Image 1 (cartoon, rainbow, N blue to C red):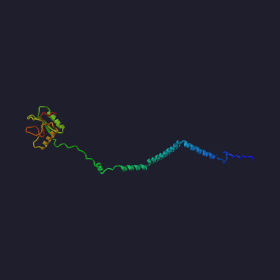
Image 2: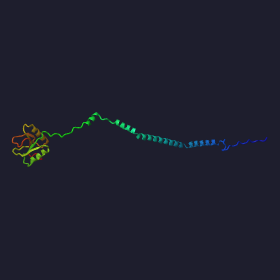
Image 3: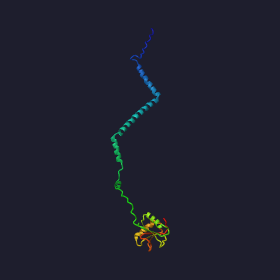
Image 4: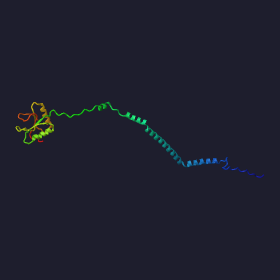
Length: 209
């Protein structure tokens, strides 16, 4: 018997509807993508980073919109104002009383009751000494009664004399020597024959203003 060769199966073309070319193409594409992903791992990280940045931008944009909306809300503004008013420190009762009561007006101190007119005697050879001493006393607030020359009795140091037993004149004499320590003779009672009357200063030349 002769040997018969079996007929070879027909190879389907890509144009035939029952062919396997579509399945082949899909499998090939997946294989190519898988190979690309395995060979390029940095691309996956870049894609993930890009997605994360986009989501972060969306979140920040949302927060900015909410903040802008709340800032323009008059109700929120009034609530913030009311919150500031409630946190203000209230005035204490003592502070309120202190500010409501006006301070009493200040008045100048009354003149000393010890001040009284003074007679000045020139008991020296210095011309115009009585006028110079009187000018100093008057500048200190003491009125001048009169100016006299006195030479009958020589006083040892410039002294202020007061009438014996007159407490007011004695107090004035003490105040005068306190204000003018140049009256080194102190305060003494008047003696007979001294010119002038009342409070009297005898200038002898040891104090020459």
